[in-house]
Length: 256
Image (cartoon, rainbow, N blue to C red; front, side):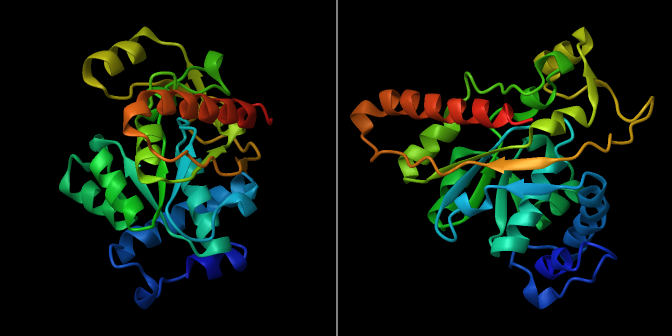
């Protein structure tokens, strides 16, 4: 039903057909997602370049740049389903699952708490799994760090791809960094360091929190296929693959 909605131009929200939903899905949560993402897609004139690089089947890791807006990643997931039929599962921050109602919502749209074990289980079941290695820290980047990533010390995603033999498809939406103006702030840095909570100093359109209507283009790179896993050389392999992933992301973020 999501695919049909996109083909219809994402106009009026359409009721989901329960029979079409994956077994983990919650109809109400998915409908809420559609209701929110539909106008955002039109607001940003959203499109994707490089969708042909996404494997049609089999285990795949979709590696994303984490912006403060965040919903650019969900727009990509919806577009992937509309154009390929692949359902994107995602590893999310533990704080999304702190309360029962929000936990049910996020699980209902396919997101699970991030852990190596969860990632391995989903990949070994041949899923398309989305990860944002920079996490919350990356999303809090101020405007002085636009079009940059914070993956320097984040290597767990590469290790997981290596151990499971999973191709990594790097994706970035550079101008999503322009949706909100994020100001450097000592309070933001302190709140993250001490409590791991987001306290950004931010504004959107004018003095409001309305997202700026910047055109958004998601760029999808060809898969990075890891070498056969060699446990005795794992650290060396991880370092080399991590460097390749960072280089691809740097190049995608330059496409503005």
